[in-house]
Image 1 (cartoon, rainbow, N blue to C red):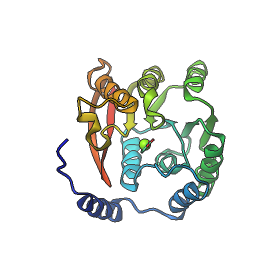
Image 2: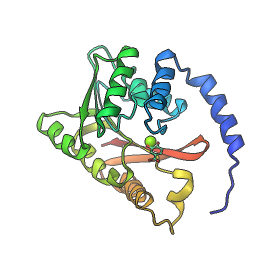
Image 3: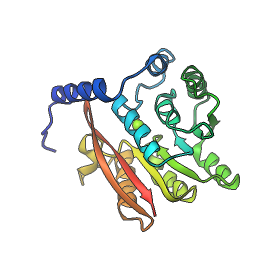
Image 4: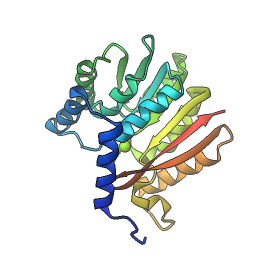
Length: 223
Ligand code: DHB
Ligand code: MG
């Protein structure tokens, strides 16, 4: 693919937007530091993306949020802070170690009482949540890319009219726009975007997110 984007400009824009719109308090900064200190992959959403998740959750007047992929808790803090006093978030996390780091991060951020971690494969947890009768106002999918289409299928079962469904990493430096891409995650993300774009119950769009390189978030509303 032709390269039309210079990383330096991306960093400059992201720094400008983060400074202006996405102030990180001590709890958010330490969520990133602890993610690093515990050797978790440093692949959390950017500050601007975190703020975007918070804004979207507030626009959706979300009282219940489902996150698929907690990692060290960074994105969860941004979203949980959008919840009203009686709101709650459930965050699915495969790795017990990641869940421990995330739990401590939620406590430090003052949202520990609103967030429940469910440890294990999300494809095991999601049917349990359905049995328990949950219907979420917002679902954020940010876990293993190969399962995005399956997570989306569950997200549609676990939401209602007006709910918002968001997927992270849906542009991936343009591999998603490369019809010759063959990697399993690129193929799954292309499938995910196709479903988000064409599902009769969804009205969706994807936004490029500028970091080092360009990634994106796909956002859909359930009708
Ligand atoms: C990866 C995963 C993510 O969710 C992300 O935001 C960035 C990178 C990864 O698996 O490489
Ligand atoms: Mg991600």
